[in-house]
Image (tube, rainbow, N blue to C red):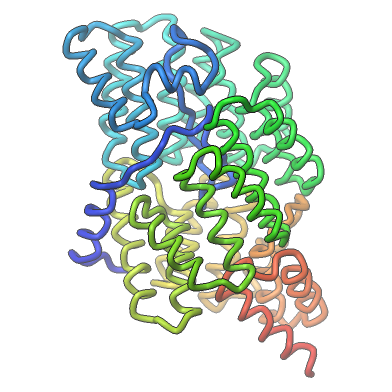
Amino acid sequence: MVADPAARQVVMTRTARSGWRLGAGVVGLAFALTAAGAVLGGPDEVPATPAAAGALVLGADPGHGVRALQARLKAQPEDAGAWAALGTAYVEEARGGGDPSRYPQAAEAFARSLRLRPDGNADALAGRAALAAARHDFPAALRDADRALAVNPYSEHGLAVRIDALVELGRYPAALDAARRADARRPGIPVFTRLAYVRELRGDTEEARRVLELARNSASSRADIAYTATALGRLAWSQGDYDEALRQCGQALKAEPDHLEARECRARALTGKGQLAAAVAEFEEIVDRSPLPGRLVALGELYEASGSPGPARRQYEVLGTWAGLARAGGVNPDLDTALAAADHGDRAEALRAARAEWQRRRTVHTEDALAWALHRAGRSEEALPHARAATATGYRDASFLYHRGMIERAAGERAAARSSLSRALALNPAFSPLGAREARRALDGLEAT
């Protein structure tokens, strides 16, 4: 994908005017394309409840929170805790708006905090761990999370990012153990939601749902209610229950009417119910404010499915621009690049990016991305072991099964391909506007011969 000046201007315009609201405690791994995860909230000196910490330090509008912290630091430049809080605010502003340009500023804020308080500064260490995770440097995220927990074993931020880092490094048994330990030390919504995601990755969707319901039932703030209901809605969508997804995301939007993740969940569920025009309108508003890769791809595919190839092409061009801006902000976008480019861009670049990311970490997502990039490059025999590895944990993801089925078909394993494609469509019939259509065509062809 080539980033042209017009596409770059689209990204810069969108991120410049993007607005978003502070979420509860953590941003769930499962909502992002690459599931990086970021931790919110303020320093340990403020109340421990995530929503309370956020209200005090960042406020309802994180842009306002950044300005308030900047004003505080202008008056009190030696306040190490405020520097750590400002770094955290920058990380979340970048994540929420899809603008990575804030990450270097976050790094400098954490560095200032640590220079002012080099010892015992769990806030800055945990914040720097969240920054590393947001930049997809998961070994660094794990190191800083461990350093934060060595200072404060009960640091909610440190415990949460440690789970995130282990998940993103593909160390799923260790991630489950970390989630259980975190639950023993600091039970609450950030831990519950992470524990649910680890369970989901291991194929135990019923247990994931049970844990998320516990999290929702324990939620008291509007932000926490919206976050946990959205997590339940996303899980329902991934299992093809679009009515339940709409119900849960509707509950989330009652709590926070402009919750972007809940709106995205609603848009995907509307797609599942065949309401493409409503889904397009929803995604257009979401992408205008937060042009993250998964959202750009979803909108582009909806345009294609609706017979509008020109607008779809422009969304895919913005993806290339986003990747360039991400790199400038210190983010490694290889997984996002591999998945998007394999279907909608330069397949050679998709394979390069997928190989690079797979060398760094072995997760179900990197196995799937490498398998698909190899297949799209015409190397399906080589892709097949990676497609099987992506589904080996039991993770129930229709796109993984679709990729595996198409690779099996290309490799001549027709019975296996029929099984994988049938399972994909039975699990989530509208997992992708284009992918689901291709899966049906391939399955029809397999069954006709």
